[in-house]
Image (cartoon, one colour):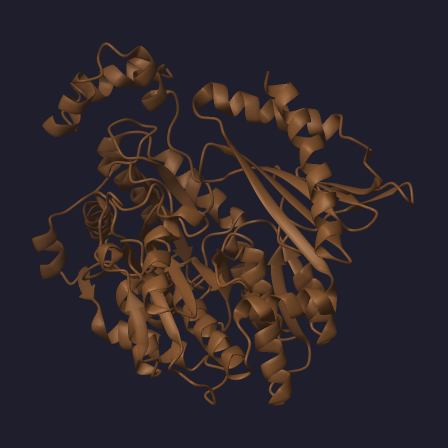
Length: 577
């Protein structure tokens, strides 16, 4: 019989499987029915490649029990794949968050109890290095304990497969099935750390992998004929980027790197920022203060697991401005393609990969260099999946992949967004433009003047809990069935519903299949290629609304995006009332 939330709560309180610390935490909420319901009304689900949730006791929280249950499911899946997969083992890395080390060790000891070797990093490491390590060690899978840029009360559990990419839906579904089969915590196997080490089922890894990874990153440098005295301010935002980013820059000869001292050390509370997210301009407050003191050319900030990087540049008035992910991506794409073209290094059948909610400016730039653009669903795992496909088919050469949410990748030895690689290339790009007498901001303006002005905006609405999920569903269904056909002078040309995999073309009065996995995303494209999209976040209790407009100049693009935004947000407000 299926237990209701109160039944599950009582079970956790009375079962011998849960420790005293957990039970004490649950007793402290015994008079709070709403909190009990939120912790037990469902099991924490796999989102974009694993678990993510608030740290705490309960089935809808991340804790050592939900981590061990997920790991037992993963272990069962690996065992089902055969002895070769069991032998190859699993690599585990973690960030600087609360409980990250504990959860990493829990996962390692569950794997070991199942006869699967765990390679555990000695201390915190960036997520992209985990992706590299899976490939380097020829492991069957990888686990990262991180909640990326979420607030401090969150943690997460991301699963990677043998290609070094996050598990895609077809794989995740099979793993989830195995996780769900672990219906009781008594089904979870676990051994002591001492036993795992003695039996050779736990190996602590570190410096050797670091060196191999850093050397590979440095090999991606496009130009060495630049002045490396450029002044760089860097903040790791209390996360994992401090060592690898600084090491790469130092070994490549960048001599003026200034680190924000108060944000240099790991801090699970991220105490100097409201959110440890480089997408939030406020995260750069201290970095900008330091940059003004040292007259820095650029500022870089990486998120806690160092897979995303934000860039701050000086505008023509000399003020520091945070670039959007779309702007940084366009700059990197153009820099890489122009440099490779100049040096005769751009291979035939080159391809750039971006997500469906990333700016179309990248497509226009890629076309200029005769490079194909391929779109994927939101989530870098889908870009990683494409790289694997190109490798297997042997018909395309992956050059660059990016998403608007500050994730970038070049090279193929990592299969996830990589802020270590991106940080190095951003510094190199800034140094190159400086040698040409230009700032990165001026380089961006030149792109707009050449290809047209593209302006993007992301609006997020936080809607927590059961009620929040219902409201998000209401908005999505309303837009799915009742969307505006025109906004101002813009007429709707295409409506893409990725949940039913259909693209409706109103000009041609026709429809065609969308050849991507099903996803609850709606995208509305106007006759001038401006667009907006709605998407429930896979990792946070948020509805995300993306806006993009283009024009011959900045004013035209701004006017268009303003009118689209006003109309769409007004409609959402009406639905939420």
